[in-house]
Amino acid sequence: MPLSPPVSRQLRHRRAIRAEAYERADGLWDVEACLTDEKPRDVVLASGVRPNGQPIHELWLRITIDRKLNVVDAEASSDWVPYPGLCQASNPAYRALIGLNLFHNFRRDAARLLAGTAGCTHLTELCALLPTAAIQAFAGDVWNTNEDTPGEAASSGTEQSRSKDSTDEHSKNKPPFQLGRCHALRFDGEAVQQFYPRWYGRAPYTADRAASSGDGAARQTGEGGNASGMNDGSGNEVQSNSQTEGNHA
Image 1 (cartoon, rainbow, N blue to C red):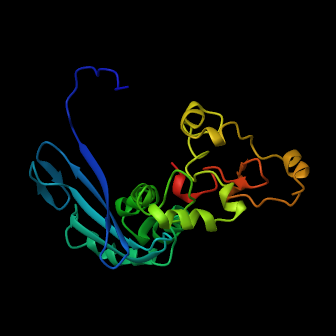
Image 2: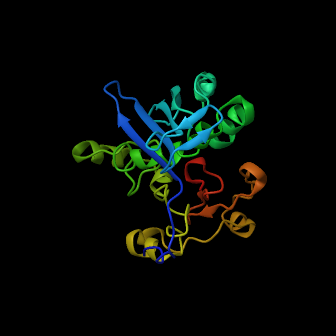
Image 3: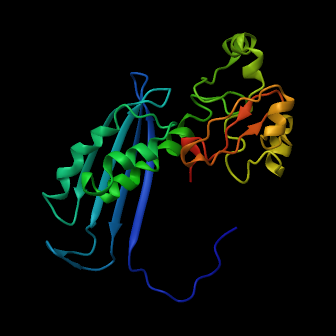
């Protein structure tokens, strides 16, 4: 459903953000994010006049990841900036992303390492895009989103058959990782009922359900202690989007 028709207005600023993912010949993946800021007129900056048609910002951030979403390399480039020769000084700081994992507290750790004067405000903003961009890239290519969980490669033919035969009962009872992590894919929603009927109607994990399943152990909550697990009906807890980095908004 499109946005409602706007009132009469005039464009004053355009920010564009895009992300692209590439599978490399060496088996790793590159995820690149770019942010641009432009104004449809000449702009007077502290460093001088920026003519119409030239961006105020054009910033690039690239990370290289393995199939487990570990960051093995990172680099930043500031091609257009309001303070030429000065803004670029923070680019090397983004190598601090190396060693982080996109699926485990990546945004929190990136902010801790690069917030404020440690980095560039807008390059650090781009970090927030990387987890879901990588997950979208892996879905259907590295991961089979019909049944597999993160880290399990999609396969076909006899290879897929062998993989399914060797999967233990615990793994077979795990729902596709994308379920229960957004409004549309909630376990009691129409999308799950229509496209994933096996998993429709899963109830929120509660202490009563833990006791009845014989699993009364305390569950560790995610950041901020705001966890709400989902039980898949066989004693397996399915983490909600508040616990899993790759699905934060």
